[in-house]
Amino acid sequence: MPRPTELATGTDLAASYGPALDRAHDLASAYLAGLRGRPVSQRVTPAEMAARLDEPLPEQGVAADTAVSEWFARAEPGIVTSTGPRYFGFVLGGVVPAAIAGDWLASTIDQNRGLWMASPAAAQTEVVVLRWLAELFDLPSHWTGTMTSGATMANMVGLAAGRQWAAARLGFDAAADGLAGHPPITVVSSTEIHASARKALANLGIGRNSVRTVPAPNGAIDLAAFDATLSGIDGPVIVVGNAGEVNGGAFDNLTALADRCAAHAPGAWLHVDGAFGLFARLDPRTRHLLDGIERADSVGSDGHKWLNVPYDSGFAFVRDKSALTGAFGVGAAYLTRASADAVSFDQRVPEMSQRFRALAVWCALKSLGREGYEQIVRRCNDNAAAFGAWVAAQPDLELVDPTVINIACFRVAPAGLSTDDQDALTRETVARVQASGDAVVTSTVRRGRAAIRAAFDNWLTTDADVAMLQSAVRAAVDDANA
Image (tube, rainbow, N blue to C red; front, side, top):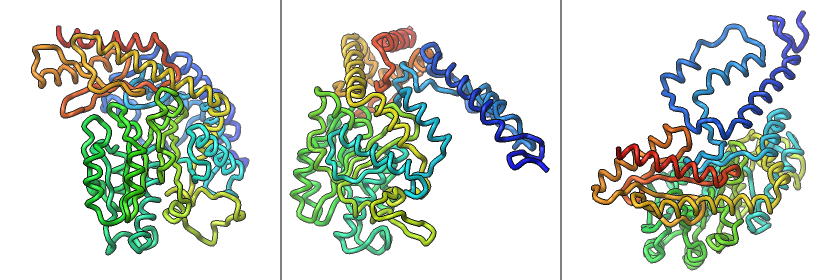
């Protein structure tokens, strides 16, 4: 008879822990040591990746450390160095050392933080982490918080609470009764509302196309147009404010939005999407951009962006706990609750089972403290400002938006070229920068024209990395023009 940990093939799984973890450690250490020397992007096609990874389900297994090694060897050409100092695409942060270690430990102990009784350690750690995050961003201490998988789910949490509040104003329970047959819930935001908020509204049954959008000519909502829209609504409304618009980093005037929401007689729930913009709170030069956020009803943000912790990580705060638990609360005979004062996070998010995400954040905050994160945010803002100033000094480049925080949005615009030709050259520049392997930027469309986004939120990025980005852009533009 095989031992309890032994398979019929003779493989002793328990004995595999050491070699597998050692191999993963070796691969991870080598990857981290080579971050600066790795190509940031590797040009690999879907067909090439399929050829490397696709195979029939194995009938028999291999040693655990062999499986780890084989995956890395096969997948390596498709690994984007998004944790490195020259990845400026999208808004993807790096990972500070303590967060990596905490995340590894979270996987090892494999706690389910959904119920207190499932893991008092995980639940209480998250309670502390949420208090630390509220203190870090100077948010009201009485708000109810929860970790999420990222800003998309954080937006969903805040908007679900808003849906519950609005439905109560309209005379029904959205979570219990559904939306069918009831008055519609109105949502207002600017044209710059993020796709994740629309996705959340779709999942909540409100509909991603139901948003009444208000112009945002410079990225921030037009308050006069917002006033006109709000005054035409005779029922409760959910307002989505943007703290860090994704293309240029513009901020809505949150104090003005809060004033107008407070004056709307039928009531207004103000949700603030602060996926990365919330971190502007940590730089004295940009702190004012978040004035009024303490008057919001809910706030969503990301951890795997500027907090520099591993995927996936996000967090949400809600002013009205009853609206949050009303949206997600559920009971069953087998879901044993420990006591009235024990937190059960399954009552605050869509998932029942939840990964112990708070451990990586706890380790990161404990290792760096407030001062460490303030330094990271200031340095990232400095890097973006330096790159933006370089762009402005180039005769054939132009900034599309002022560099407000950590995003520089620009385009290639040589004199004498039509706007269509400038658009084509801008897109060609993105492709050439990515193909170089020296840096990654991403393309976007801003005011109907092609543009390039460079986002600075990695703790590892130095002046030398910014200079390399400048060289990569300059070379790409020159080659495209040759």
